[in-house]
Image 1 (cartoon, rainbow, N blue to C red):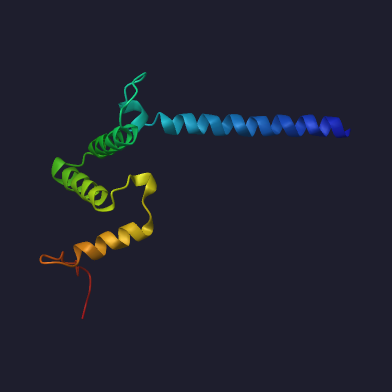
Image 2 (image 1 turned 45 degrees about the horizontal axis):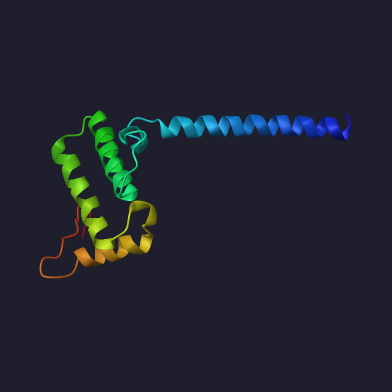
Length: 123
């Protein structure tokens, strides 16, 4: 096999890999609960980050409903995410592990600190 044939075979193989990647990305982007499915097409948002975050939360709530979780489970989770956003002043794609640690520290301090569960511990 000549060098040019190997190159063509390699390029063909690379193209198949790229096509498979594109198909995977398309499937993920169109997954039920995807923020993209909840955003109106051809609409320019004045605050696109806020619109995407709202769509992400709505999609996440729908995914949980599809798993037959009750509103009494879903709503506190959404409230916690909203509290975390307010605490950091950032959107999820900007969050870091340090933000999570600072949030937990914040919740565990102050006048009414959260109590950590001790379930499963034996003395």
